[in-house]
Image (cartoon, rainbow, N blue to C red; front, side):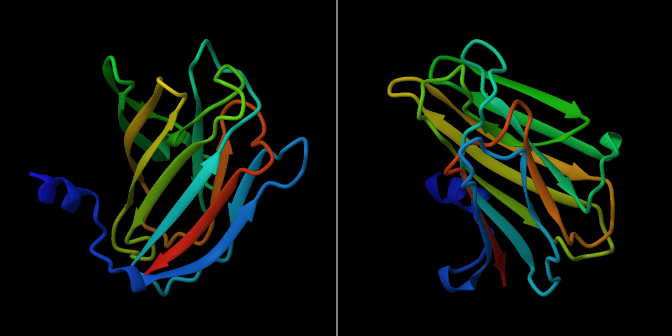
Length: 186
């Protein structure tokens, strides 16, 4: 069973098959609204983004903020679909969204101070111009006895090769020390 679960989350890539493309760390004390990777070359099979982030907003009582994704500056919300499963140790929920592309969730000011969330986004076949783009995110955070974990799938209804990715927290600026790293998978 564990092998089946590991295969579900595996990109099929070996450790040496990952190339670091770019890393962005929020350095401004007031934070910044978004991070963006631009001029992404089409020489890899897949892309992966690993992040550790928090935002300065306060969406709701102990509710994290969505991390929105945008490909190639496409702001047409009807081009994006996502499904998610959330578990918090006591219950599980699921949902779907037609609109902004949700790349997981990050803690905000309604969640314990200093807590950052982590996430891994796999963007599959990003340069294949014969099909719409799919991706998946595994993200979560721990609040010392609480927190949440999410598994999210995404569809971008566009066959264009992905050359830029913008990530924005739904609810306030990304705070100082939030870090995003883009990798190419051979």
